[in-house]
Amino acid sequence: MINGLNSANSVVANKTSPRESANNIRGNDSGTTGSQNVNEATRVSRVEEIKAQVESGTYQLNMNQTAQKVAESLIF
Image 1 (cartoon, rainbow, N blue to C red):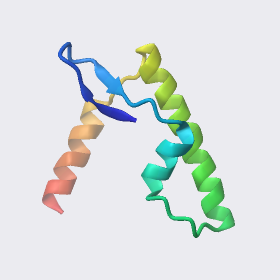
Image 2: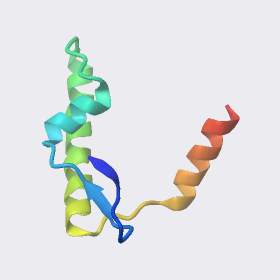
Image 3: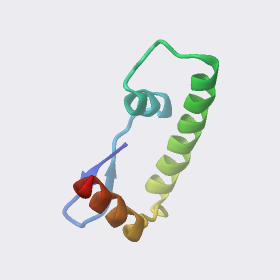
Image 4: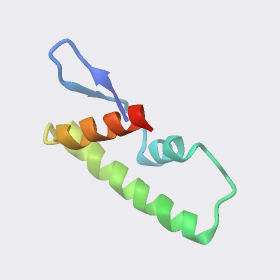
Protein backbone atom coordinates (compact mmCIF):
# COMPACT_ATOMS: atom_id res chain seq x y z
CA MET A 1 0.00 0.00 0.00
CA ILE A 2 1.37 3.42 -0.87
CA ASN A 3 1.97 5.63 2.16
CA GLY A 4 3.37 8.73 0.55
CA LEU A 5 6.60 10.24 -0.62
CA ASN A 6 9.94 10.20 1.13
CA SER A 7 12.38 13.12 1.16
CA ALA A 8 13.59 12.18 -2.34
CA ASN A 9 10.00 12.29 -3.66
CA SER A 10 10.03 8.53 -4.17
CA VAL A 11 6.93 6.45 -3.51
CA VAL A 12 7.02 4.73 -0.11
CA ALA A 13 5.14 1.44 0.22
CA ASN A 14 3.79 -0.39 3.27
CA LYS A 15 4.92 -3.93 3.88
CA THR A 16 1.39 -5.35 3.93
CA SER A 17 0.35 -8.53 2.21
CA PRO A 18 -1.79 -8.30 -0.93
CA ARG A 19 -4.62 -9.90 1.06
CA GLU A 20 -4.39 -7.20 3.75
CA SER A 21 -4.29 -4.50 1.08
CA ALA A 22 -7.36 -5.93 -0.64
CA ASN A 23 -9.16 -6.11 2.71
CA ASN A 24 -8.34 -2.46 3.33
CA ILE A 25 -9.70 -1.55 -0.12
CA ARG A 26 -13.00 -3.34 0.44
CA GLY A 27 -13.41 -2.29 4.08
CA ASN A 28 -12.95 -5.74 5.72
CA ASP A 29 -16.55 -6.73 4.96
CA SER A 30 -16.89 -10.43 5.70
CA GLY A 31 -20.32 -10.82 4.04
CA THR A 32 -19.16 -11.61 0.51
CA THR A 33 -20.99 -13.37 -2.31
CA GLY A 34 -19.53 -15.42 -5.18
CA SER A 35 -19.24 -12.43 -7.48
CA GLN A 36 -17.65 -10.40 -4.69
CA ASN A 37 -15.07 -13.17 -4.25
CA VAL A 38 -14.23 -12.93 -7.96
CA ASN A 39 -13.94 -9.14 -7.64
CA GLU A 40 -11.78 -9.58 -4.55
CA ALA A 41 -9.50 -12.00 -6.40
CA THR A 42 -9.20 -9.45 -9.21
CA ARG A 43 -8.37 -6.68 -6.72
CA VAL A 44 -5.83 -8.87 -4.91
CA SER A 45 -4.18 -9.64 -8.24
CA ARG A 46 -4.10 -5.95 -9.18
CA VAL A 47 -2.72 -4.99 -5.76
CA GLU A 48 0.04 -7.60 -6.14
CA GLU A 49 0.85 -6.25 -9.62
CA ILE A 50 1.02 -2.63 -8.44
CA LYS A 51 3.01 -3.57 -5.34
CA ALA A 52 5.60 -5.37 -7.48
CA GLN A 53 5.85 -2.33 -9.76
CA VAL A 54 6.28 0.03 -6.79
CA GLU A 55 8.94 -2.19 -5.23
CA SER A 56 10.85 -2.45 -8.52
CA GLY A 57 10.56 1.28 -9.20
CA THR A 58 8.60 0.83 -12.43
CA TYR A 59 5.18 2.03 -11.23
CA GLN A 60 4.03 5.02 -13.25
CA LEU A 61 1.16 7.21 -12.19
CA ASN A 62 -1.04 8.64 -14.95
CA MET A 63 -1.07 12.28 -13.85
CA ASN A 64 -3.74 13.33 -16.38
CA GLN A 65 -6.14 10.63 -15.21
CA THR A 66 -5.40 11.43 -11.56
CA ALA A 67 -5.99 15.16 -12.12
CA GLN A 68 -9.24 14.40 -13.95
CA LYS A 69 -10.54 12.26 -11.07
CA VAL A 70 -9.56 14.88 -8.48
CA ALA A 71 -11.30 17.60 -10.48
CA GLU A 72 -14.42 15.43 -10.88
CA SER A 73 -14.54 14.75 -7.14
CA LEU A 74 -14.35 18.48 -6.42
CA ILE A 75 -17.11 19.34 -8.89
CA PHE A 76 -19.59 16.60 -7.99
